[in-house]
Image (cartoon, rainbow, N blue to C red; front, side, top):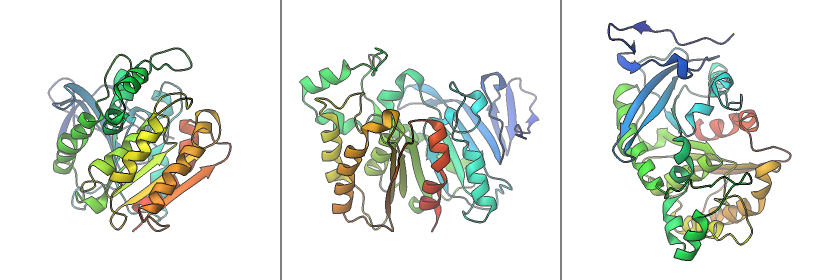
Length: 318
């Protein structure tokens, strides 16, 4: 049976205190129920880089002890990571269950997960790697910004790509706060980043832009097309060119990629093969790089949940 975060109420209305923190308590907005560990919600965090507020859920493993120190995994799409009863599609990664089982079995050292909620309308522009976007010609960018989904909805929602600002929020604003308030191992070998689809793209971009911060990245079902077609699409080539010049040193970093072959993932195999050739040429080998294929796997949280143990084991096993 899932358990809901236990906490003690403060005298101040709307706040909850846990582990010395005071954070807003908004049960009506989906505090996740968990199978393992506990979640501390950091609500209404204002980002100077993004000029807006963001919500972050911090997952603490069973028996979390502030006298110890823990590696940290930063994950995107934080509202999709724990409790399927609180998500829009009733699916989730169930990170608490997967990570908790690996830790309980002694297969992984305990670690924290910083689950950063996406910005809804701004998700695509936050997660789309900015420097590759800016390398496109003006005509290519103009065409990119006019792209639509299969439903006819605008991909970029009349917004400009701003992933450099999103990464500044993660690295310069959020990470120092997490390291101050929680018992973390803040150094690069113990700091990781992960996501799927557009979250895979921004995880790749993060480790390239901030190799001194992130020691490893897990990029599941990486959305190499950037938009929702591969026909006459210059975006993948821009991503590949960026990778050639910006991949971090293989001696001090780990990279994990994977893809399915069904639904949206059907677009990815040939593009991932291009990325793999670049990664291999950079000097990555089996010890610090994996790319895995999952025939028949779709572009869903259920699919990512089923294989989440693989990137966790790869990144967090010393």
